Image (cartoon, rainbow, N blue to C red; front, side, top):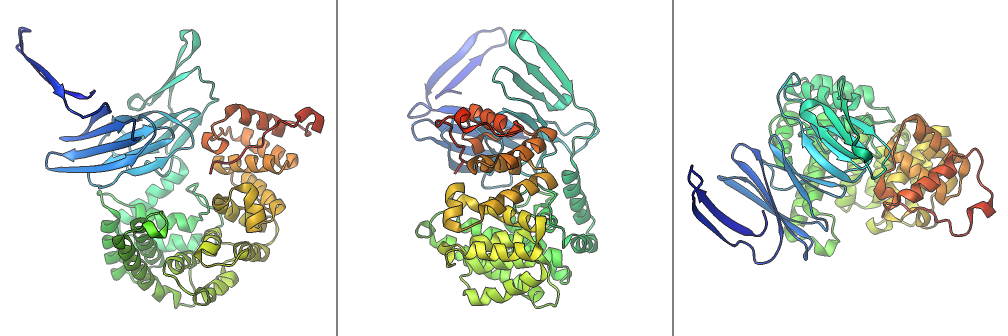
Length: 517
């Protein structure tokens, strides 16, 4: 749009009646607009000097506004009922019914976003196509920040342009010499994990809460997840599928009200009760924000205390039973963390959890964070409890548990300091990381594992990881490698070699990759 507002009126025969322009903004800015629903518009003003965005959206009857920090100049595209602002590897989604933007961080830098229109044989199950440096990600609309439907990878070379045409279910590439290729998507783009989530939402539609409970019983002791989330289990994914359910647009607070009514009618349903408690925790911690304590507003503290209290009131009846689902202990751990419980109070629950569910990675990941010194824990306590659970599980699965907790926990230190300061066993973490890659191949975890193998100069582990990488056609995640493609290629070449190169071949200048902090 530029920074000027214009009035231009012309007659049908081409005669100009009025043509006026005047400054609309006090300083130069980049202004974008899009239509994303009937009578609904979004406007984004990017201020290069301030590195912020002013975002307005809504209809003539109701307008919303937020200011967000963004050092990049963004792009804006409207979809069926929502819009997307994207720059770098961040995509912000705006909905008519929501007062804030939903942030999604992708694995690769986003080049283009396109929406499949809600028409045709797929009905309402239309998709969003994200074209990135290394892939096209096909995601379900309204749940675009979760459950990627499909990932079609390619090797990034900087010379090819990839354009998605969701309406035609096609991908167009344009490369050097004017060569253009068109690929047609065949089959169902919905992956098993999205189908699983959709099946759970169908059960919620039908009010088959008994089936939700039965599914929870079936998944209580599963150690893997189906969503791809870090430190998650199948039961944890079930809880969040219940929370994410929204056939009609609803805020988190509205979802909590609806779920509380359901729990009131079905008080013995453990899955719904745990989901409601976790939702209260989410609402409370979101109100507090991620800032340091002295920056939290009085209202933020009030809403945190209120919702943590609601969460404990919801969960307490379940914790008094003889049998408790493992994920209930996870939520209690978070409640204790933000409720400032004394360690003696939560320790009784952790002792019981150690006996009943030492295998639950979600639980011990939460415990590891809650026992950081900043939360009142003792130095080395996080590692001690993680090792205790891993030893009880034993063998390869114990090593995997130890590594799963580590890969979600190391961000508080960074890998090199993680071992020296948090006290985790580097050899055991590496063994477990290889186990994760081989048991449940995951692109994010495999990138992390390869980075760690190079930091530890463990070629044997790196070679195993490279094999899994190539078998699954994974791509490198730019932000984990500090956006350094040559560094990645150098490490991959080292990992793919049958034997490590001699020291004199590597030279002293070889840099060790660091994960993004």
